[in-house]
Each structure stands twice: as structure tokens, then as C-alpha cells.
Image (cartoon, rainbow, N blue to C red; front, side, top):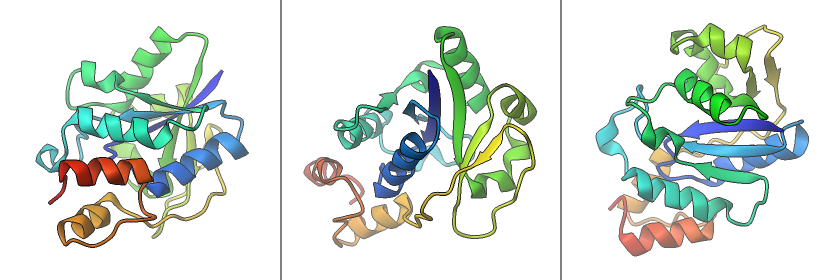
Length: 188
């Protein structure tokens, strides 16, 4: 089984994430997309994140009706900060019958060379790259696949700021995620 791993803080998961994941599972050879909720991204300030269990719950709510999507908390049980190569290695050992591919936005290629063991990620796993606004570096490699997907310019930062300002986030979030956030008064 070929699994696309979609890593993120998902603070919160939004419609852009869901659209990209759907394109990946619908229009490529991926059998499933697993949303890997990162407890601590080494490039982000951990103080700005909701609790990891709340972010995992939002992912679960957002993907509950899609049989090819799964949420995983694998990084919650690993050393922090989380490094992609360590998670890929762990998942490969735990699921030897699966082939894992990393799903990333084209903007991440601009600094991919700074990732821990980036060459090993390329050689052993490979990348499925979707377009992002702005200048996206092109990485020529046999294990890099560029996927034609809608360019979704929705950010979790914009959503958090909108909620804090009392603006509607309808259509930016799955309705169950919006309800979860508003019920718990997150991002206010």
C-alpha cells in the first residue's frame, strides 16, 4: 500500500489541507493520505500551538467521512522537536508492507536542503509536491513528483486572526472543526 504522509501543525486543519489531500489520493497512485499531527515543528514557535490532542481531534473531525484519510499521533510519542526523517524511519519499521511518500508544498522546496537528512528522505521515500503561492523552487530528482493541484492560499494564521477578531471562518474550515473551535473558544 502506498501512503502519502501529510505532516503539519494543523493549527487548525482547514479546507486547503483537505483539498490537497483529496487531490493526492484521488489523482495520484497514493492509496491513503495520513495526516501526521506534529506536536512541535522545529521551524515554528511551540507557544503559538493549541494542545496537540486538540489539534489531533480537529483532524479526526475533518476527515471522519473520508475512508482514504487517517489521522496519526505517531510524533506525540517521539523525541521533540520532531524530524521528518525520524518519523519516516519509525513508520517504515512499524509498517514494513507500506511504501511511504512525503507530501509537501512547493514552497517547502526552498529550504528542503536544510531538513535533517534531506537526501535520505529523497532517496528512500520521495516527495509528492503540490503548488503553493509565491516562488517555488524546482527540485529535479527521480523521486520527486509534481502534482497538479489547485493553488490554495488559505493559512491557519489568517483563520486564527479572523476568529480572534470575531470574523466568520465559514467555508475555511470543515463545519465540525469550526464548531469544535467555537465551542471551546480557541484562538480568542
